[in-house]
Image 1 (cartoon, helix red, strand yellow):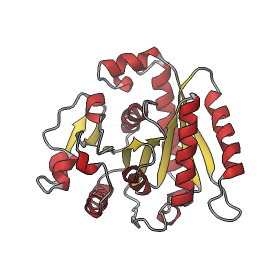
Image 2 (cartoon, one colour):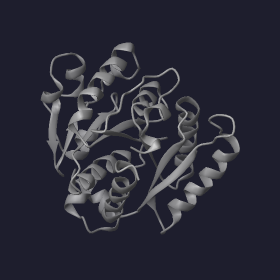
Image 3 (tube, helix red, strand yellow):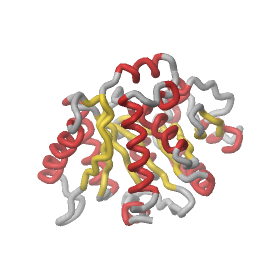
Amino acid sequence: MSEELQPGNTTPAAGPQVPLTPHGKVMAVTSGKGGVGKTFVSANLAAALAKRGQKVLVLDADLGLANLDVVLNLYPKVTLHDVFSGKASIEEAIIQAPGGFSVLLAGSGMVEYSRLTPEIRADFLRIIDGLLPRYDVVLLDTGAGISDVVLFAVSLASVVLVVATPEPTSLTDAYATIKVLAGQQKRANVHMVINQTARLGDGRAITGQLQQVLDRFVVTEPGRGVKLVHLADIPADPSVRQAVMRRQLLMQTLPGCPAALAVAQLARKIEETVISGG
């Protein structure tokens, strides 16, 4: 297991200590603002990793405004809320998604889950602990922003993928999110996925610009900043909108389109550098 996956490097000072095991890797896919394609990335990355032979589960950690079920065109009879309330077991709530991976869906519109309580904290920890031995990868599709629920969900992950677009508002919010993650969770590394890029290389340039700002204004501890790791550019591609409108996975319907090829490359890079500990 690589240094960045050690739980001591990712746990907030006042937050939970999550014992990660060699059997599971927890990654949070998050963003500074909504509408940047975070859930699209989570779902299609899961499909791409599953195609590479990984046993993957996506947990919908956006408890208040969950939409993973919409993206996957699933109608769950049992949700994460039922597990939290004790009405169902984890096994009953896990369902198979198109694309060869598992999902644990949250449902939506549950106001009582929009704030972090000791009960929700304990339930999250219990569920993650139950999932880790069963999967190679657990992807947390978090809400957007820096609410206490989002930050707690992210704190459970050994690796964070921040999804942003080249739009100034997205980059401003991504910077704010990374600043909080560096300050509160003392993260040394944050991985970047730049979605809807216009030209090859735009995402790496954007990541470099963000890095310059972080180097100037954000220090996690004396003499140590946060390092951004550029993982992928996903090009602007009309096929993405077509797949989303049809509630289909791009990796299944149009695996040869530019955006799908970029997601496949992202999965390969994650498998080689993050999952393998290389």
